[in-house]
Amino acid sequence: MTQAAGTGVVVLVGSREDAHVREVARRLGAEGVDSAIVDTLAFPDETRISLTEELDGILVDGRAVGRPAAVYLRGLHSHPLAFMVDAEEAMTEDWRTTLTAFREKAALLLGLIGRWERLGVPMYNPPSADWVLHKPAQLAALRAAGLPVPRTLWTNDAEAVRRFAASGRVAYKPILGGAATRELLPEDLTEERLAALGAAPVTFQELLPGEDLRVYVLDGEVIAALRIVTAALDFRQNEERMEQVVLPAEVARQCVKACEVLGLRWTGLDLKRGMDGELKFLELNGSPMFLGFDAGAGTDVAGHLTRTLVRHARRASSPQ
Image 1 (cartoon, one colour):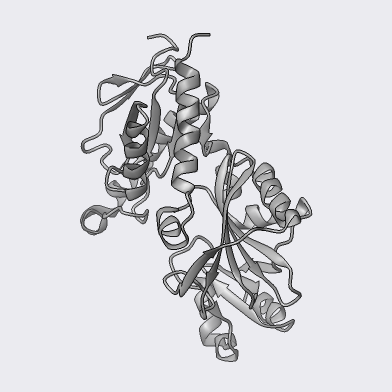
Image 2 (tube, helix red, strand yellow):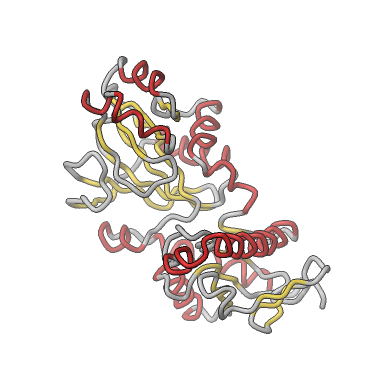
């Protein structure tokens, strides 16, 4: 196999059942660009992946995709709790074997996408950025770069929580996700409630009461910005309406800088306005959803992403 294998092909890593993967594949097809889906939800039951000792020795369902033109990484589905994964029955029957199987699945998939990054394939997003997608590392990196982030504490120490709560209104939420953000109330500071920290650490953060913004950045350019109007502390599933906005130049610059700091080619950023009126970074998503925002606010994130992938494909296919 040569390194030219896969040239001009755009690889989509995720599930065929994922609407985002399907829509990008559809749009690529409409542009006459060949795409290959590495169905990670169906792996290893159905999807077949083979890697050889050669860096570009990569076959997916019998097709050589050694060095594609670009890769859109939607999701690996490599954990029993991952989005769209249903492993409850397998975990109940034999949790140890199931976890071992997921560990092996993750090892191969991470090796696969790591090869593509090593080969210099444009990746949306590269695996080398994974470590900064964890909030305790991400917000610290942004703060160190001089970007505005909310005062935050990640802890399982009850006394640390009480000290943090003494300085003003506080919100709390899981570190990785899976539950809505809630305000920390006096009844949450009892011994009984705080004993729950013995099961898992929690994120505690200064409560930001202002507007919510979602901003998309792609290859160093803000491609969409919208305001999410909601009366809830956590806008997810509580959106009243969404409207496109033009960011102040300084905020747009900060959003682009945040991507550079974290090594992200593309992202959806969540910002929220604090008591002082300043917009602060809550999160940069490594694989943001966008179809719902496009539908609700009239943005064209899907189009921007697809056109970028198309340009990579055509550049790779053109004579050198």
